[in-house]
Length: 370
Ligand code: SAM
Ligand code: SF4
Image 1 (tube, helix red, strand yellow):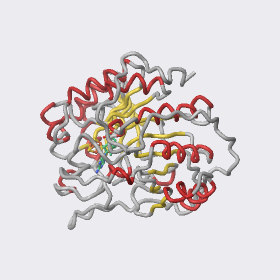
Image 2 (image 1 turned 30 degrees about the horizontal axis):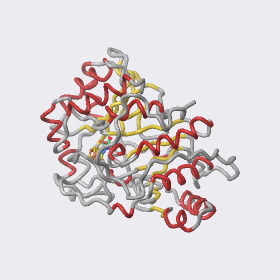
Image 3 (image 1 turned 180 degrees about the vertical axis):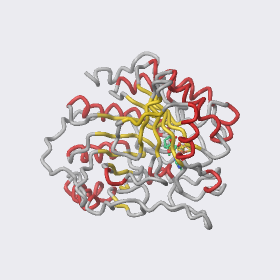
Image 4 (image 1 turned 60 degrees about the vertical axis):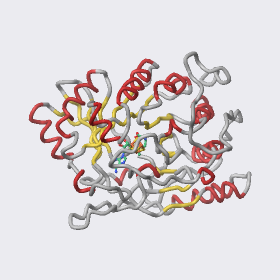
């Protein structure tokens, strides 16, 4: 029983320290069984089933990765955030409409105060079979103290973002991150039985020469590695063009040394995978700039303020917070969700304009989550 430990945390789980979050954030447990799926599944105008919800639980982070945030980021006032119970309510409404997979992201999700309450609560949907999977995308800095509890809540897989194994370069990319904490977090996750995937943003002239080393390291520990192209989200200091490294180039260089066999593994998202014959591991490529992955898009994104983005690369969004708070009954929420999905666009419009390198979309990745 997934939630058998609730109220008595597993040994070794430390209480949270100073966290971000709202004044209302407190430990909570929802025991109500999921109501039967009485409403129609969410299907967009192009016939795509919406079965995957990514939830950004905070826009805050303990790092300031150069491609993600500016050094002096202004964060949202805490009063604007959804409470964890409200996030649970929206997630549950999506599950009632056919969502099978949740990814918890941010900002850094594990810095939100009482975040484990959300995982504990969501685990009821895993236990009931209404949900296939709850996953997390994290920078790994807080993973060492949360890994065991995440596993106890039914989380099976975590994505850890890590762009280099060099401590000095790590500090430069994250502006002040400590690599040893992230490596300890990865170890703790593996020890807890979580399947860890490493996500690395490929940065021109920064970590591009290190990619083969990272791949051997990840595959040697049984972890998949996914490379991500920099996306033009949010205005940040160094011109985005300086960081953009086409993965077609990375792939071509790897093929000088390795045999890359196309692999059918698909997530419904932008990643395409190869199996590296020499290491036996999976290598993913997320190439939103050079390939169109939209036709199979099954996902939508909820921000920590209750805004639903139907496409990562478009500005159009729907507010779910107002209908959520308008009544305890979820009828208005469901209506707003339905209306939002009816506006899901066919695809995104990312373009890097080489003369005027500006953000294609004004918001940062930390707002919508990766
Ligand atoms: N803090 C967590 C982390 O770093 O994994 C979760 C949120 S972070 C926004 C999610 C992912 O987005 C990370 O893998 C990060 O490297 C990636 N990311 C952030 N900004 C990006 C950008 N401009 N282009 C491409 N990937 C980006
Ligand atoms: Fe934080 Fe993740 Fe953005 Fe880095 S990529 S600043 S860890 S939210």
